[in-house]
Length: 225
Ligand SMILES: Nc1ncnc2c1ncn2[C@@H]1O[C@H](COP(=O)(O)OP(=O)(O)OP(=O)(O)O)[C@@H](O)[C@H]1O
Ligand SMILES: Nc1ccn([C@H]2C[C@H](O)[C@@H](COP(=O)(O)O)O2)c(=O)n1
Image 1 (cartoon, rainbow, N blue to C red):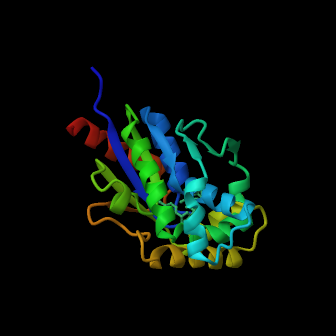
Image 2 (cartoon, rainbow, N blue to C red):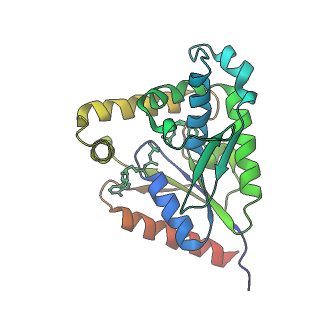
């Protein structure tokens, strides 16, 4: 018997494990996967590449519709392209990371990307795990399951510094907190936990434990549908 499609929203601050957890859960359960942070990074990359003044929200708003962003939703091989160019590497540079909060705070950018996210979720036949900052609150408020991942700034900085090989942990921690503060304080659709989200503090959990916890929660929801 075919199982009903299940929609899972996973939100939380930077470095809490959203991408690693979401990809693994989607792969294990045969669901699609959408990294919405990659979409905001892709439009930021386009703005930078096209010389748009990212300190000017009206300049960003005026051209936001020109970038064609395409997300591949296979959890084993998620992809992101802008105007036909694979930008999976370039969107992870320090320059894009430092500018993405400003670009993603512009309401016109959020309206365009939110529309894209909803249409991708609606066309996922078996269901989808969508990760970001405002998925449970704004993009998919009717999601079957909402998870809000947290972790201490120290745990998150240690994880990121490990990834960035030799990066200073204190500087990494400050950069993470600065981006969280910008993402949480913007007017339109800030980073926030939905009232009906399950909060999971991952500070003391291994990635495998977090994955198992979320898989169990999804299976319970799916069985109840
Ligand atoms: N529970 C965990 N224990 C240890 N390391 C973890 C855990 N969860 C994730 N990690 C590691 O932490 C790093 C950040 O994880 P990930 O990219 O999934 O976080 P994120 O919330 O998606 O971050 P961002 O929002 O900045 O993209 C990765 O190197 C990942 O392997
Ligand atoms: N739903 C989302 C997802 C991401 N953003 C913005 C804010 C983040 O700092 C940035 C990059 O996300 P990451 O790749 O670190 O997950 O994108 C957002 O505003 N809303």
